[in-house]
Length: 175
Image (cartoon, rainbow, N blue to C red; front, top):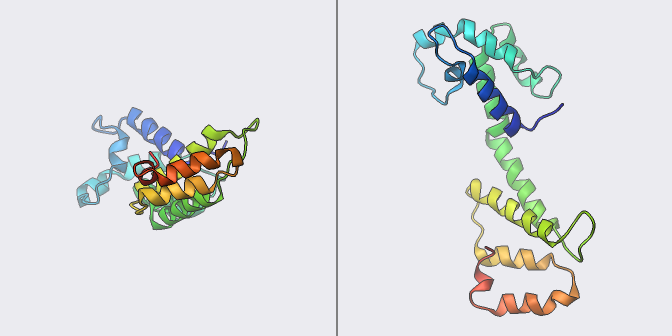
C-alpha cells in the first residue's frame, strides 16, 4: 500500500523509536536533524544504519530510486537525509505551493452535491491557504476573501457576497 510521505515518515520514526541500538539508544537518534555528527558518531552508526536502511520498506516505490546508491554502503542516515531532501526540500515546497495556488483558483461551489458541499469548498480554501502560510507565502486577507467569493457560482449567494465585500471587517479576513 502506498503511503503519503507524511504518514510514512511518522510511522517510520515511531518504528525507529521502538528499536534500541548498542547503548540502548533508540535508533531514531540516527535520523535526528543534526548535521554536526562527529566522526566517532558516524562510525558507530555502521550497524544501526543497516537496520535503518532495511527498515525503510520502500522497495518498489518511487523513493527507492533516490536511495539505491546508499544500499551497498548500508548508509541509512544518508539515505534518510536524501529522502527528507526529496520529500521536504525546495522542490517539494515549490510543488506544494503550486498545488495550493491551483486549489484556490480552481475551487468552485454552485450547490451542494452528494460528494461536494459548501463545507468542502470552505475546507479546500482553508487547507490551501494554510499550506501557503506554512511555506511563508504572503497572501493578504482581502485577496483570500476575493478568491473565496469568486469561486461561489450560486446567484442566490450574490447578496451575501456583496455584503462581505462591502463590509469593512469581513472583506479583510477569510477567517
